[in-house]
Amino acid sequence: MKLNILVLPGDGIGPEVTREAVRVLEHVAKKWNHELVLSEGLLGGIAIHQTGGPFPDDTREKALAADATLLGAVGLPEFDELPPSQRPEKGLLGIRKALDVFANLRPVIAFDSLIDSSPLKNDIVRGADLLIVRELTGGLYFGQPRGIDVQDGEETAVNSMVYRASEVERVLRMAFKLAQGRRKKVTSVDKANVLENSQMWRRIAARVGKDYPDVELEHILVDNCAMQLILRPTSFDVVVTENLFGDILSDEASVLAGSIGMLPSASIGDPLPSGAWRGLYEPVHGSAPDIAGQNKANPLAAIGSAAAMLNYSFGLHAEAAAIEAAMQAVLASGNVTADLKPKGAPATTEQVGQAVCAAIG
Ligand code: IPM
Ligand code: MN
Image (cartoon, rainbow, N blue to C red; front, side):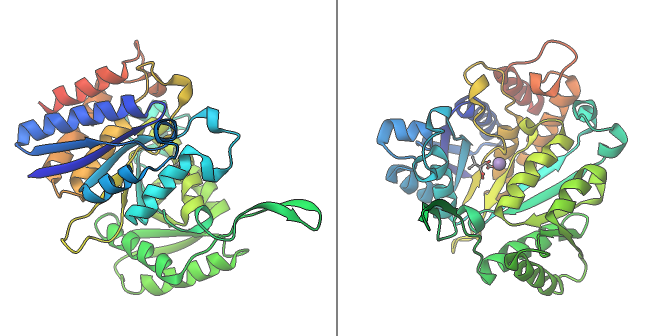
């Protein structure tokens, strides 16, 4: 099979973790005889430096032409004082929107071998295996009006949480379908006791849920969800929520997995007319500029994102499963980066990538 992949290394630790994900993809392509066609592009701070903007046209065109895009991370502290419209993150939001990848799938698994890496009690975390489905192209991140101006003589900031019913429905359907292939439970997260937006969300969730009678539907308020994720993480299967709530809850849930360096993600939309799924695959973690260029970032979130790409965009399930099994073997060997608090000397980013390849065989 021909795998046409755009790689956007981005900023901070992005280049070093994507390098390892590409190493694993190259290894898999060789072993299973796939033709890997890689192109590279600019996104985020590096794109601002080289082209003047965070999401150059060249990157947009390459992403639309590729079967799938692998992204490192974006964001650099030097842009911290700038308004959102001029920041590296704007490039990330731009590519998500351009590809119309409205569902961001963030699996959170507490692997047995990492149970001591989590600060939570073993008995609480053991067996946790949930999938956060975060709406990715709407809500507060994109709603208009937005901005800062002067109203009644005072500086006033406005953001808008805007959802059309169809946007809510499509991501909920995705969540129910994914739950059918798992433990058949959907937790829909909202703030329906305060927000009209959430009242509509909850109503649509209840209606859509009727089409999936084999799936149990639970509604939960987002503040309570934040607490229950830590109190009873094993009771969750698929957790579906709007963009900002999903952003926050997924960082929180990463504590169950031992480190945010473990969390991959797949952003997908509807299949193209050709039947292909043109996804965007990126680790949940950020660009971590404090450890960038030091060969110590955990590449497993990026490698896991590459596995998700093989699964969702290419239907190469055996290859994806081989990567995931190899990742587990590496975790069990204890040959892991510093974020996972290994007993011995921490492995480097590169060593983890090489170990995953070796474990694939
Ligand atoms: C994430 C990140 C991004 C987001 C930032 C970098 C814009 O935190 O993917 O979770 O908020 O979506
Ligand atoms: Mn985030």
